[in-house]
Amino acid sequence: MSKKKKKYYTVWKGHHPGIFENWDDCKAQIKNFEGAQYKSFETFEAAKQALKGNYFDYISKKGAFKSELSQTQIEKIGQPNLNSIAVDAASSGNPGKMEYQGVDTQTKKLIFHQGPFEEGTNNIGEFLAIVHALALLKKQNSQKIIYTDSKTAISWVKKKMCNTKLERNAKNQKLFELVDRAVNWLKTNSYTTPIVKWETKAWGEIPADFGRK
Image (cartoon, rainbow, N blue to C red; front, side, top):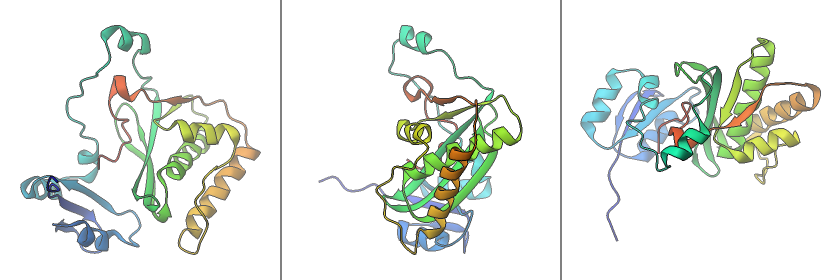
């Protein structure tokens, strides 16, 4: 059995910002800290350098992406519409601490961020992110479209329901209050904003990706 590769965790915002050598120590700094900012790195030096910088610069760094699709396939898919918001969610565990965000597809500028929430799932986060973006764009009377890499979340939004199997409990009460508000918004509002599947195989990770994979 191969030995698990060691990681170092940079915490920009938490109870005690800094660099931590294991996930448990990192988790202690972000638990119950709203708006926590953290990311793993493969070396201590990389983590140390990141701590001197800006969190959002590092979660947007994808490196050079090389598609496995043929040129013909890529041309058929085309390029993403940059007049858009890209949304994504991240969950440390399933269920686990979950957060979601939306960014400008072209500039990668953060538009909104919510969480982390206790005992959430990635699918719930993706669903909430789409509805958050829909409500924001309608309020702004914007013609932008929404990109997501979650087919499940798109399906839930179309059905105006959060079809999660996750059970409600005291820990995730706040999260489910948001879910109820999102479902109610979908049932009481109309919208024309297109919700489009991000073509990861052609374009790489969605710009809103948290970069913790």
